[in-house]
Image (cartoon, rainbow, N blue to C red; front, side, top):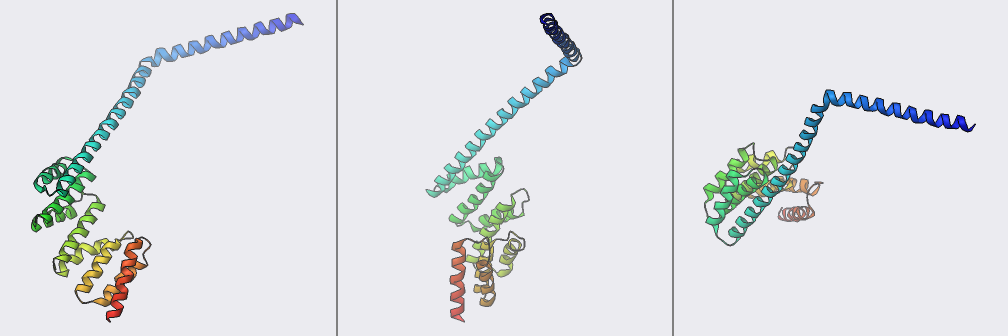
Length: 226
């Protein structure tokens, strides 16, 4: 019995040794055939990993630099140092891309308005509205800002409505645009239509509580004046 057990152990050990040799031979064949490709593949993966991390780090540094530049320009603007702030904003608008370029353009328009350079401000905002490379959100902001400026400046309704109406027609329509439209109707002595617009704001699921409260106040005022 003992000899049988010993033979069994020896047979199992021999079998494992044979299997291991076969595995090694197969691996050697694979290596002989594909070894160079394996090395290239590993090198490529490592290169891509390093490149991705390098690009990621560079992008983070770039975003931080853009953020710092924008913050400095905003601080200069708040101090009334408009020419200095415009220099930074213009650089961001021309050389940066994405959100910082768009924000810089909005601020350029703001500086122009503070300098009473109204035509220049309007030109910047209108260019943003027409530029398809500008994000849709920033185009909407530019349209709202331009409509608000024109409303304050008593521009004709024919110039203001085309800026606001595109912001009302889709499912993500702007309640702020609707409020500006209501104010335009009040200016045009069309209180009934203004009330309709304010009522739409009060029933909007997206409108803020502050905007809804303001709309309800305006509805009450309009009802009292009738």
